[in-house]
Image (tube, rainbow, N blue to C red):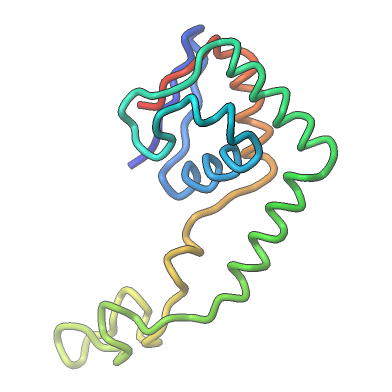
Length: 144
C-alpha cells in the first residue's frame, strides 16, 4: 500500500507506507499549526492542503533543510532505531521453526529474532527535499 499525493496542478508525489508515515511525521513535527489544517496525514482519504499552505510548508521544509534541522532529525531517528534491540519473532515465537518442524521460519530466517517493526519505516533527507519540491509546484494537494 502507498500514499499517492496528487497536486491540483497535476504534480504527483508517492511513497509506500514505509516511507510516507515517517515523512508525514517529520512534516507535522516541523509545522504543527500549518499541518493541522490537513485533517489526517496517515490515511489516503483525500485530505490535504490548499495552494497557499502548500507553498508555506515548502518554505518551512526548505529552511529546515538549509539549517540542518532535517538532517539532524533523520540522524537522531536513525540512531534511535539502530539502538533498538531485536525482538522475538512473532511468527515462530523465537524457535526459528515454523509449520513443518524441519522448516526454517521465513520471517526471521531461523534466527528466532527480528528487527522491531518501527525499523521498517524509512526516512531520508532526500525524501524531505523531494516533498518540498512537490509542495512548491503542486498548487495544493490531496492524499489519496
